Structure formats: C-alpha cells, structure tokens
Length: 150
Image (cartoon, rainbow, N blue to C red; front, top):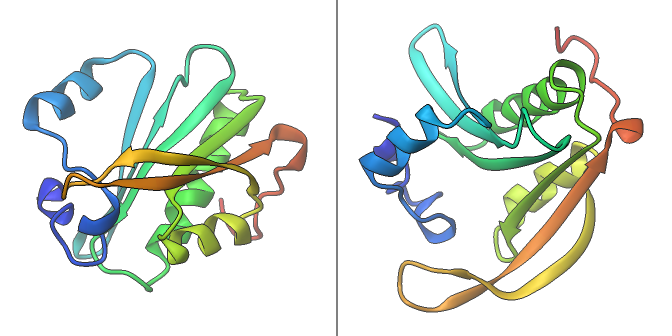
C-alpha cells in the first residue's frame, strides 16, 4: 500500500520510488527506523530516520502522506523530531527536499528546521533530469516539542 503512495500526484515529482528489495533492506538495517502513522481508518503517512543508533547525526528520510493537507505530514515530522532528539539522543537532525517542493519546505521551516544551503542538481528525478536539493537542519538545543505531541 505505502509503495503505491510514491505514484500519487503530490509525491511522484519529488521522490523516487524504492524497490521492494530496497524497502526490505531498510527494514533489516540496524541504523534505520521506518514508521507508519495511522488514524482510525489505517495508514495515512510514512517517514524514516537513518543513523538512529550511530553518530547522533540523524537523517529524516522520506516523509510521505497518502493525502496532503490533512496534518499527517506535520504529525510525522513532529514525531520524527521527538524520536530523534528524545528517544535516540540525536545531536542533529537533517533533511533534504527538492527545492521545488514548496509545501514540504514550508512544513520543515514551520517545524523549526533551518535552511542551510542548496545542493545544485543534487537529486536525479524520475524523468532523467536533475533537481536542486534544499538542505535543512535542526540541533537538539533548538528542538521545542509542540504542545500536545505526547
């Protein structure tokens, strides 16, 4: 089900769909954590964290929602922040997003991430072109859990 979300119009231009083997490798990797967010009707979002047991520099990987503009992306980012900083003792949490994904960029900025730079042609798009990547970061001392997160 979640793999099919990569093909949705709000996601496909900004992400590359992983293979089933890549998903299995991620599930088996000791330094990766994959999360599924559910509501009363089932799965609504997915996000991943990489290097959760490693260097204390944690990468927020793909944040993917089944339906945009329902708050599931924000919930996912806030839970990722909480897990990284409070459960995994991260020093830094970072994320990259295609520079033309304005909705995701606004979300990360509203959750306290700081735009740290742009990787020119840093993302190989599905159509064979390259897109710029916007890099965002947050340090543990900057994290403020939103009210009602827990």
